[in-house]
Length: 476
Image (cartoon, rainbow, N blue to C red; front, side):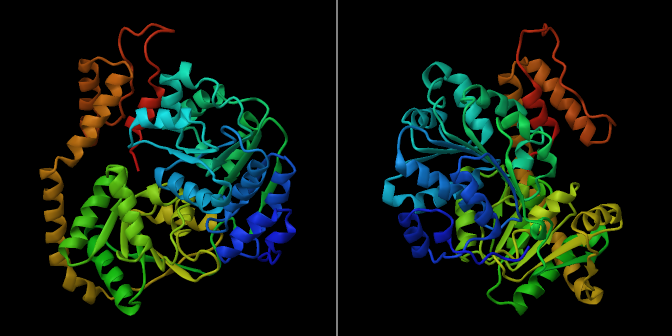
């Protein structure tokens, strides 16, 4: 499908919204906006699939603001999204466009005072943007105070719907849906919607209008995608050489490096800093304020290298990312699509380099099958990389030692222990479970341990499924 040239003024939007868009230098709609906005204004449920960077947020924000302006009352819309950063970004767009109607928009995410956020919900803002876990906690723990607050919402939005419905958030969503009215408009948007289609009827009370921008489902044509073959033992040296070489050739460029775990992300950040680079880091073990600071610094280009986990791979609008580097090939090919979607946004050119070791060939083939094209190899001069090996290895080892001194992994384990105890396990059961996890990581146990607390009768005790998913599945 070719890019849309239809102006926003022809989509049924009111003049005040057209003026707001013009002040932001936006005149023409993208395909997902062109086809979805009129249907949302008609009151249809909508399922929209389009590549990241095509303006999906505006596709639901604009009609919500228009309908809200007609009759502003209570909580009109609830937007659920998987990450904190994405929640703040969506709220920023609502606030920017809703100034003229004195919009009240509240963000409900983890990492902030749950007492203050409960008050924020009780104040009945027009729009709530939330992550499922924190909103479910508020509803569970304060049901008598907030029970009726969400009963009158008109619109529910699930952003990044494929991830929201993949099972990870089931418990939280079940809790939230108990407080929502059956009669509502449900909107689902994502870059990869296939996994959510079968589950759509569980959250949508009416047959939805389905839009899929087939030209944008995988990766955009203006994205130059290549892989770099390298030995596992010296992959970090290759990474430093490639990033340094790219930034020297493109002086004003911005680079995102994706790593697999929080530990690896922070280790790489320390390593790059020790080698003289000015970098930011973004992962779930960083305090929320520091995460937002890193993201803001990268957006403003005061920091030009951002090292992150997949917490930054979904939906975040970071303009002018020239290069995305995959330090590892993700286990799920769709994660690759979301990662490289940070570059070549809104019609711009960009590049994505992926490091492939001798152990990653199968994963590479899976990615190529999903995106429908073969990646070309980017040849790297081994002799030039050799000059960096010794210094990189020393810096990486120093980074690992720094993390040990900071008790980085111990802090994560402490948080896990608290989650287990809050979920209903005794201290002895929690410690025993965590020891099994450590044994599994050391290779002493082949099978990952399961949560089976003793003495919990059927119908009594805590529901541990939510905590088990957090513990067994590594946080990104």
